[in-house]
Image (cartoon, rainbow, N blue to C red; front, side):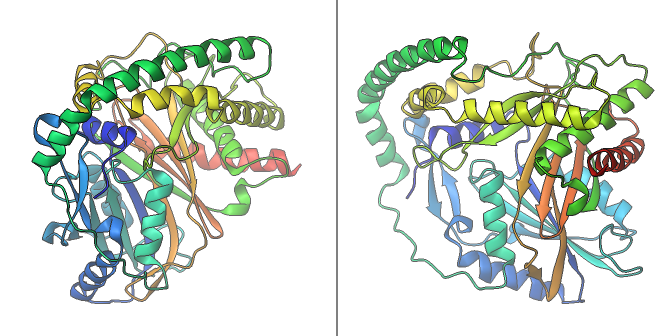
Length: 449
């Protein structure tokens, strides 16, 4: 079976140090389909999707990369939650509790959480209509944001996925460990040789950046009030469901407009909390070309949010230009050279480096004060239990540096702005959502005018 690429193994080992799982929320109409039928649907569907029919296995002493092996559906992979008052506020509280957890990919790399008969759900379009809220929790070792959306589309898609033949497990953990030992000298030599190439590429990158041929890296910032030197005290989640047209404008991407909205709302919230706002930056995950068969193909870049620019069309133009420049640099082959070094590091060395990395320390300079992750999940042609999908949302993980993250998630004719926060830095999340809604209207009006 498939061995984990270095980036995927990194995400797995990082998950032991703090939550990194992906949470994809889908809101469906609730038709009253019995819970047993919903469960059976998920069992049948997942069995026909190879990537959802695996679990992770490690080799002894991590002498080789972990690998995926076929696995049967686990009884804990479907959870129907009963909450005392099944309304949207109750689901939001339950979601906050879920966001601090993780699946252990060695048991199963994904789980589906289901909430039934939920009242008062935003974006359902009908007063009194109850909703079925499904939250797909995925180990980051199994997929990145785009990959997880693709898996969800296979799970909830209208067409039945075509079952693929399962591969035999031709190498047990011990044999893979011995193979890893045999390849250790090769990996060390390859690391040295590729390291020399990466150093040469780094010098060329610096020279071409200085000459203006390649955009410079993003700005750096001192940590702010959203980046305390402490682990998150908890997790709160909120969503704002919008017609997609409210985040569309000529010559602007949805991501650029969403960043502009966040710049307005966040500056306003921090000012209300008594903080002086001079600079704000966002860390934005950017897709990069697939490399070495890995499932996590992204790089986080820093984008200046320009809160000092009052004219919002000018601000969004600056943000859009910076985002485009950061993307250009992120996918440049010279920058990708370092990834080729990581790809051949011996597994034990890679794991040791991850374990020793001071993840709980906030550096003196950071790439952004918050995260804004943007993913479009395709047309709104999904269903579950006979109910059509209304909208979807995502909740990027918190960490020792990022205590406030945003998801920008498109599905059909809707876009959802979601917030995942540490209550220690966002004590009034409802007020922040009010400011986000007002910022959407303000940014939209500026671009329509």
